[in-house]
Image 1: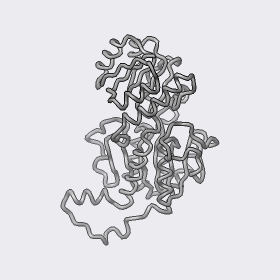
Image 2 (image 1 turned 120 degrees about the vertical axis):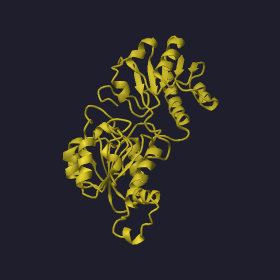
Image 3 (image 1 turned 90 degrees about the horizontal axis):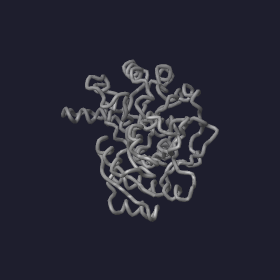
Image 4 (image 1 turned 45 degrees about the horizontal axis):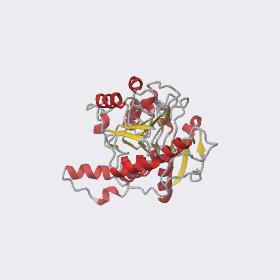
Length: 336
């Protein structure tokens, strides 16, 4: 078996891969550009397994005999655009970001609830705000309803943390009749059996679900079915104090409709880590809004990212060698 990695493996990471695939030939090199990746693939002269962040269909001609791509990303939309041969299995790193992105989501909600975003702006302006000003503004999250739109690994860990804060949890998933999640997840995290939500909704019930929520987290993958999933109709159904956090993909929310909802006070605020176009344009009104918290698509970043990916990769290598089903395998029909 030949494995090509477009990241440089440190000795502990390489050891994980070697133990999972004894005797495999491993070629690894840090590739920061498409040109560097193309050079590596051409010099490798084919492989069975590719461990990488991104890959295009144009590059597949450089990888004869490829059987499986293990992505270091949770999303696969950038790969599915390439119309890869369905004979090539694609697996994602869904689950590795669950703790970090769930913590980010709850942190954004807490910051909004306690008006930390306003206080940070005041600090930058050397402005002392009186505590009395916040008596009618700060609201504890306990007892409020958290809606999770997209009940995968990140959504399930967010639900677990929300419940720990005393929140009522409801969720939306493609098939609400199936509560369990077979995907990879670090031990002790998430909601593998789907028991936390008081109720699971289907995609066609999103308006009714959003009407109940005080806080909403969006963790949907980007597919044709989810593009523009939350738009004017959905914002009109939400509570005027509701706070929405999007850590999924920017295109699942109609950004123009979101801006209008924020301007008109149809929702209370938004925490956005992803946008329809990135980087966010310098002239976007989102930058100046007092009720937004914006970050540059970094919610999934953390120390030890590649190490955690290698743990999942090693699990899948053992399965691949034994002819067993791979974890987090993308369904081409669904796009994730």
